[in-house]
Length: 198
Ligand SMILES: Nc1nc2c(c(=O)[nH]1)N[C@H]1C(S)=C(S)[C@@H](COP(=O)(O)O)O[C@H]1N2
Ligand SMILES: [Mo]
Image (tube, rainbow, N blue to C red):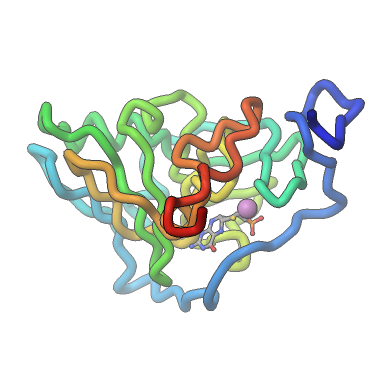
């Protein structure tokens, strides 16, 4: 039986609406050098490519408004982001038929994994603006992933490498016992304890 039930049906079970915008990450905020920064799409794709910050900013962009949910039980309502749809970048990279997963790799060593399918949704953005202003470094600026349907650890801050792979590869938190699918409406917070712990 769940021990806690939110009475707000607009946020997922077990979540509480946060005040402000919490900052959560492991490691340090990486330094951004606009001259050398690149976002790379590579691996099992026909057309690997990379974009400079200015090139990325010149890509067609969309705005997404909605709620985000962290596994540590805060949700933030009505957030507003701008970025390039990941689906457009994926179309340009042309994944090989064997490419089944995308690994988001961040500048500071963080990573997270998702099925290619999950990256194709209209709401998945390579985001560089929050609330009408350039994304702040503490929230992942210059550029972060936004996968708002899933718990927020699946949205890597400071992304620079997006690798297309055939076999799934657990990311930073997934290796440490977080659920691989991360759907907040199903409360997919943690996977079953590994056998060596049981
Ligand atoms: N590079 C990197 N990205 C990351 C993390 C991290 O530790 N490093 N933490 C994740 C988690 S658990 C959350 S809740 C969100 C927090 O984003 P915020 O600090 O903008 O609220 O970033 C995600 N992306
Ligand atoms: Mo989180």
